[in-house]
Amino acid sequence: MSRARYKLVVDPIACDGAGVCAELLPEMITLDPWGFPIIHGDEVPDGLLELARRTTVSCPRLALTLVRLDKR
Amino acid sequence: MTVATAQALTAVGGKAFWFLTRASGLVSIALLSATIVLGVVASVGWTTQRWPRFVSQDVHRNLSLLCIAFVAVHVVTTVVDGYVPIGFVDVVLPFRSPYRPIYLGLGALCFDLLLAVLITSGLRHRIGYGSWRFVHWLAYLCWPIALIHGLGSGTDTPLPIVLLVEAVCTAAVLAAFAWRLTTGRSLPIGGRTAAGIGAVVAVVAIAGFAALGPLRPGWSHRSGTSSALLSQLATKNGTASTAAAPPTTVPATSGSPTTTAPSGSSTGSGSVPAVPFTSRVTGSQTQTQPDGRGVIQITLGMHLQDAGSTPLTIVLTGQESGGGGVSLSSGTVAYGPYRGTVVGLNGGTVTMRVAAPGPITLVANLTIDQQTGSLSGSVSGASGSTGGDR
Ligand code: HEM
Ligand code: SF4
Image (tube, rainbow over all chains, first blue to last red; front, side, top):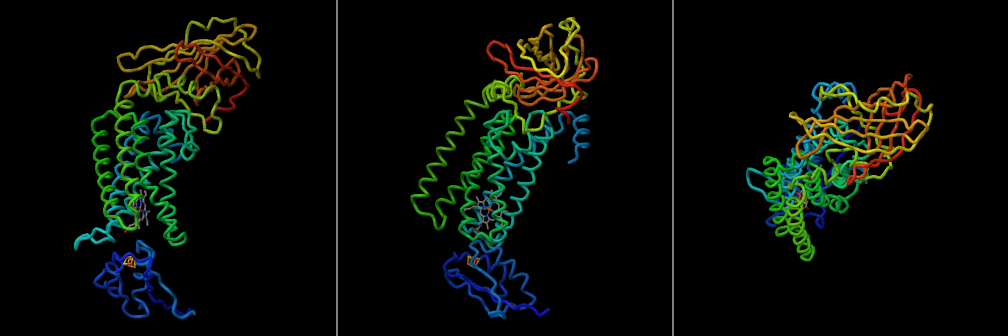
C-alpha cells in the first residue's frame, strides 16, 4: 500500500482568521499579524497527519483542507 | 431498555420513570443552555491563554452530545412510564399527542430541531459550511421552544428549584445571545436588530405566559391533564382515538392498595350482548375528593343502548401528583354482573378485559363534557383478549 501524501490548504475567502488551526497544529501553522494562518512546509509529515486531519475538522469555517499531493 | 425492566420498574417504583422524566428534562434544559453559551463563546472567538477557542468548541460539542443523551432519557422514560398516553410517534411528530398536545408538541418540535442540528454537525464536511450554519442557527430557536415546553408541561413548574434553574438558564442564554449579536461576525445590522428585538419580545412573552399560565393554580387542568385525565383527553380530541400511538397500560398491580371493585350497578339483568357487538353508551362521570393520601377515584358510569340496557361502570384509581394532575394506577370494571380490569387507556379510549364469563375485550371510545360531567360514546366487545395488550 503506497502511502498517500497531503498538504494543508487554506481557503482565504472562507477563513475568518480566528486561529483555531494555529492552536491545534502549531507545528505547521502560525498566524500573521491579522490572525490569518501561514502554513509552514509543503507535505504534512507522517506523524502529523492525524493531527492535521483533526484540525481541518475543527476549523469553524471549514476553510482548512487536506489536499492530496501525489494524485494530480 | 427492555420491556421487562420497564415493567419491573413500574411495578417496583410505580413512579420511577415519571421522576426520571422530570429530572432528565430539567438537566436537559440546563445542558442545552450550557451548549448554546459555549457555542457562542466559540463563535465570537473569545480566547485566553488558558482557554483557547478549540476548547470552547470541543466542550461545546461534547456538552451537546451529553444534552442529547439526557433528552433521550427524558423522552424514553416519558413514553415507557405510561402515565401519559404518548407513543414513540408523538416524540417526533409534533402536536398529535392527546396529552397536553401543544406543550408536548413543542417538546417534539424541539427534539426534531436538536436532531437536525446534531446530524448536520456530523455531516458538516459533506453539506458545506453554509447549510451547516443555517441549520445550526436553529439551535437558538430550539431553546425558547424547550423552555415553553418545560413550563407548559412540567409537573414541577412551580417548584422553586425548577424556577431557579430556568431563570439562571434564561439569563445565561440571553446574555450569550446579546454578546453574539453585538460581537458577531458576518451578520448584517438589520438582521441583528431584528434578532435582538425578537429575543426581547420572546422573553417578555414567555415570562408573561409563565405568570399567567403554569404558575397559577389549576394549570394542569387547563393544559389538558386534569384530575380526570381521561375526560380531558377525550374532550381535547373528540372521540377520535389515537390509533397510531401504542395504548397506555394502566398497571393493575402498582399504586394504591385501596382499589375497590365498582359496586351498585352490578345487579343488572345478568344478560349481556353477544360478542362481537358495538353499542352506543351514555352516562356520567364522577370523581371523589382526594383522601388523606391523595388517592382519588374517577367513576365512569354508563349504560349500553342494547335491549337490556346493560350497565358498564369503570372505576379509575389514581394518586394525586403535584400541580393537580393524577397518576392513574389501576382501573376496575363492572359489566352487567361481570367483573374486569382496565388494561389500556389512550386518549378517550379505554380498553378493558372482562370475564363474561368467558374472556372478552371491551373497547370504549368516550367523550366527556367537562361542564356537565355527562359522557357519551360507543363500546364494542370482542371475544378473547385481543387488542389493548402491552
Ligand atoms: C444540541 C446540539 C447543539 C446546539 C444547541 C448547538 C448550538 C450552537 C450555537 C448556539 C452556536 C453559535 C452559533 C452562532 O451564533 O453562529 C454554535 C456554534 C458551533 N457549533 Fe454547535 N450546537 C450543537 C451541536 C453541535 C455539534 C454536535 C457540533 C459538532 C461539531 C457543533 C459545532 C459547532 C461549531 C463548530 C460552532 C462554531 C464555533 C466557532 O465558530 O468557533 N455544535 N452551536
Ligand atoms: S481555523 Fe479555519 S477559519 Fe480559523 S484561522 Fe484557521 S483556517 Fe482560518
